[in-house]
Structure formats: structure tokens, C-alpha cells
Length: 253
Ligand SMILES: O=C1C[C@@](O)(C(=O)O)C[C@@H](O)[C@@H]1O
Image (cartoon, rainbow, N blue to C red; front, side):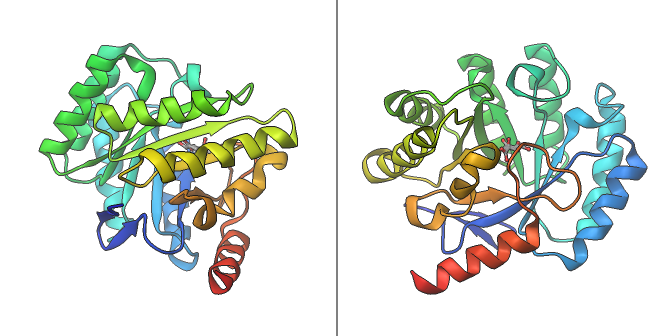
């Protein structure tokens, strides 16, 4: 399995990497939040641009990114527009979604873009190709905020993302029972053992699923989301606690 390297961070090697989301609404909030990251354990910063008040003005998005890059120095930035149909803040037409992601990938200020895998195969492939042409990696994603699909379905979705050419397939699902958490972990293990030739990211959300955000090194999830300020999804632990648990587990593996 080949790790994905962005600015000296090797995703898919060793301890799962910690990704902290920024969910500020104004430019000021976003930049101020990024400034607080200097003293916390963070490997990758996700900018959840769907929270930004001016997200539909690409020039304003680029302007925030220029400052974000300066504040975050060499920390990799994952650019994510999470659409409302997958649990995000805003809806967007596929054509605008493609334009936004392609233009932002071309700025040189982001290292990874998140592309929702079920936007339509042609659009997804178009964004992946454009991102790759700029040296930007792609995290393909899928979210089910209501339930946990069965194991074969989860594995099938992750394989589809790999087939579409994503560098890192990712899925987040909601458990309705403890058994659902085991289903997600079992799918993660199977994907890694039988199909994946690249890192994957999986999580079971909310309190019931929190264990899945900690045990990625065992079952094969290469990155985990932790909160510094406001969490971007249910079940995210504070980054300091997350870092402690990941390090403790790593020592005993
Ligand atoms: O896809 C994900 C995963 C996530 O939904 C989570 O459950 O931690 C949080 C989102 O910000 C991110 O884009």
C-alpha cells in the first residue's frame, strides 16, 4: 500500500494523521481559528468552505485561502465543500461545484480537495483529473448521516472511489447500534485486506462510533478528524485527547 504524501505528511503510514476542521463563517473567524492551531497536534487542516458566508464568490474564497496558507505555513490544507445532501451547510449545482474545486486546486494553496463521490461519475472524474494536473490530491467522500449500510455496500462504495481515481477513498456513516460500528470496522478491514492499494479513511459517527476514530491504525483508517473549536460532525474528540489515545495505542502495537 502506497502512502499519500503531502508537505512531508505521509497519510497511510504509521499513526493515523489528525485532521482538524475549520467551520468559521466569516473570514475573520476562519483566520483566527487557524491561528490557534500553532500549539495543538494537527497534521492536516480541513477548511469546510460550505460554512463560509461568501463561498459562492470564488475570488473571496481565494482571498481567504491566501491568508490561510500564510497562517498555516507548511501544514497541508484539505479543501472541502460539504453539500447539504451529505450533511453540509449549503447546496450547490454540480457545474458550480466542479468549477469551484478546479479553480481552487489551481491556486497552489491547497494540497487536497474533497470530492463527493456520488456527484456523478463524469463530474468526479473531471475534478480528479484537474486536481491531479495541479499536483493536488483528491479525497473522495461519502456520508450517510442516517444509518450504516451493510458491509458489502460500504466496501463497494470505497472501491468505486478507488476506481474513479481518488487518492484517498473516505466514508462516514451513522451507527444505529453497536453492531453497526462493527460493520464499519469490518468493512474497513476487508477493504484494506482485499482491495485497497492506497490509504482509506472511515468512521462511524456520534458517541457510539467514537471508537472507530481511535483505532484506525489497527483496522486501516489513515486519518481521523478531531475538533479544536467547534466539531464539524458528531463524535469528534478534542485533538489533544485524540492525540494521546492514538499515541498510546501506537506504542502497544
Ligand atoms: O468527511 C468528513 C468527515 C466528518 O464528517 C467526520 O465525521 O469527522 C467531518 C467532515 O468535516 C469531513 O469532511
